[in-house]
Each structure stands twice: as C-alpha cells, then as structure tokens.
Image 1 (cartoon, rainbow, N blue to C red):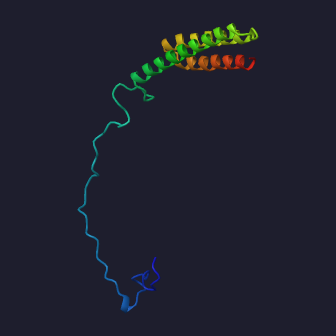
Image 2 (cartoon, one colour; image 1 turned 90 degrees about the horizontal axis):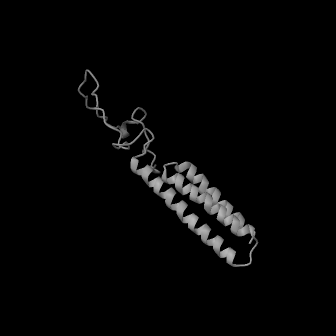
Length: 137
C-alpha cells in the first residue's frame, strides 16, 4: 500500500479526475458438461504395495535389520559376559549380560522369521537387561 491518496480509490467513488476505465471480462464459451478427467493411479502407490503402502522389499529389509541387530547385540552381550567373568565382578553382572544376549538371540530368530515387531521389543528388553547388569558392576 503506498502513501498516495488516490491509490485505493474505488471506481464508484472516484471523481472525474480519477476515472478508471474498466474492461469487460472476456466471455468464456459455455460447456454443456464439465470435462471429466481420466482416472489416475495414486502416485504414492506403486505396483506391488499392499493397502498400508509397504512393499515386499520393506518387509525384507525389516527382517534383515532385526536379525542383524539381534545377532550383533548377542555377540556384544556374550563378549561382555566373558570379559566380566575374567575380572573380579559380582556373579550377577555376567549373568545379566548372558541373559540379555540370550534374549537378543531369540529376537534375532524371530526377526529372521518375519516377526519384526516382537523382535524389536525383545531387542529392547535384552539391551535393558544388559544395561541393568552393567549398573551392578
């Protein structure tokens, strides 16, 4: 908005000195029926997807991730249990690491079989058991 007084003057209230010529809008040709657009597939929906939008590759990736993470946490828990056994630590510490490793091994098996949601919860539980065991050290 500018500071000029005549910048917002309506044509109806404009005086003879600020007369504004209005152009008539061009008339559009009348159509009997609205034009129908052809049905298009949803661009987010790719071939091979289910109703939730997941592809088989997503499920395969989730299985591999759950199995790999379970195996890695199992190896880490077993290594920590062996290292704690070699030192003078309370017996509860290596037992907690071994128990957590066993839970993570079960998660790896479930993840490989496609039970990725249960495998995730077992991975979380196994890591928590190992963390509690680490608190006693």
